[in-house]
Length: 186
Image (cartoon, rainbow, N blue to C red; front, side, top):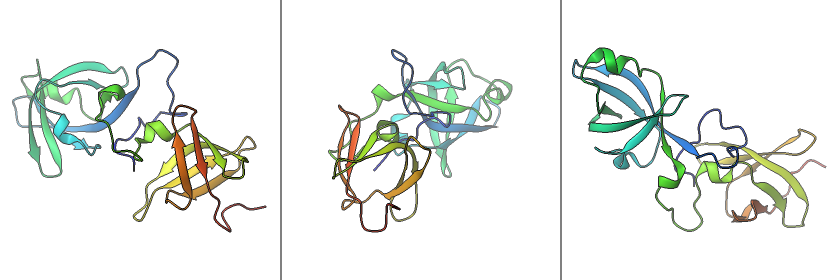
């Protein structure tokens, strides 16, 4: 079960070697009031980690900013960043993504993974057949669906359920699956 979404432009899920991995935790919407607050749409299951003193990275350039204050507002958070004291300053951040470093995320229970850990894995059937690479995770109401693309560009959709997903080995970048009858067109 993924907990934090990768950046929209993630592609393969893997940054260039040596580059830090950033994950989207929110999207800044509009200024609120006149004292530098801005409304953030929450895109993480861990909003409580976005607290005073936490460094986050904003926008495509991933500019570092420190949270000076936060409070809940409807379904989102109202944030104030250090050095932002008025509405005009906060407005400059409108419609930008808020990121955290992936290595600052909390550890998940065994068997649960973040989206960014799964995107890019080689997907192999329990028969040993390489099915392709996991390229997208589709969130549905019942369970996630993994989109796997082979070298010919064909896509296979796999339900992320225990009878199908047998194991995930992040060290070898492999997911082993069992193909239920009807999942693979022959």
